[in-house]
Image (cartoon, rainbow, N blue to C red; front, side, top):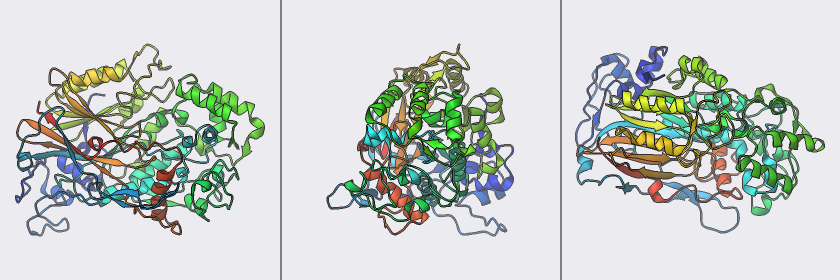
Length: 595
């Protein structure tokens, strides 16, 4: 399990797919870009000239016949389509429902918490890596029988009016990444995308299939149950939920939400994803590992209910308060209270079309789905996971980002239940050893949970002797190694960047990025550069989806729905308005002492 795998060395990838993996081929093969104003980009590589010709966007050879071309232009920063250019923001006006438009850009903040930023570094720096982080896509089967929409009777924010559009929103994010022509600071090619978990929402096979097709390309029908009709809370006639197609004056329309005839038919209509043009890697989150993100596997009643023909859509507020408290306080990791609640309210259940594809998936099925050649896209096969993971029953791995940097994806989900995270002793020792074995390389660690949200030390039922560890133990392990640059994660749906300092100079940055399901719907570009002055810098730049900021209520096309997804999320009742974080958590330069 400690073997380092490179994108370029993925054994089963065919040559065409390999060469299409633009940045991954060039960077893992040893290409570094010296970035100086007005100078050529210099490269040194040991891969064949023909491979360079196909894979490098700045190649001097035509891939069709090797005919010499004019010298490539120097690399230049590429800020178009990032939050350095513009950010979605409410337009002028008042009212409960606000329309969005183009807002002011977010400036870059230099953070010297761990090392002083030295003058002249921009003229000296060399790019070491550039990649994109997706996190908390939460692709949601909104018609799934086990969903807890009825908790809205206790708190408005526990159900989101925009949830039926998660697939359209995620595809638009893929389109944004595909449109980027380089990294915002260095202009170097982007080399891969890493997801940091909660790719799905209900641990449902339907959602897993949608996620893999969003990332690697394919046609997706974001619908389950009846293939012809939507069957869920948004055509239930209940005023508790936004009823977009109906004239009913529901609670959300009273807040200014629009009446959009044809919305639900459009929401379940087939969507086409072009798939990422970059290699991508996957990290598991609690919503990928556990039913509803909080219940352990094993209850046959809940598993059967997930694929069955009944759905609870409303609940007395007192019952919602009790269930919500049990989940939050970690009192029901097995889902027994939910099972009893569904039995108690059997007469209130509504009929829906049964669907076996809504079944929960187990960790082995998650791995097999990633390893399916149908979902390889630009690679690598397995997207970080391997047959060794499948054989060992693990969901953590290491891979080669560049000659100078390794990536490590860890599994912080707790199979014992609950949405907070932890890590077992076996995996923590593996992490420690992997960092020691690669002490001559810098390291970036990826996980779903943050250091603050790893507080769940419940025993893994399958490995009761494997002690669980919280975030402080992971921080201590990372701080032992001077080669660790960053810990990149998600889970909290909020932008937050934390400086971790250790006496032995084992200092690193923890970079937590907001979700793509709760406004402001962000992903993050991360660039690593050597400043050639005893320091390194990590540049973080946030991006939104490719959908326009302004919406048109008459436009229910795929792009129109993606734009509407963002605007509805901004207006979602009860939403947390602090998720964008402070300016020091958004577009930044994070300086580190060079180990």
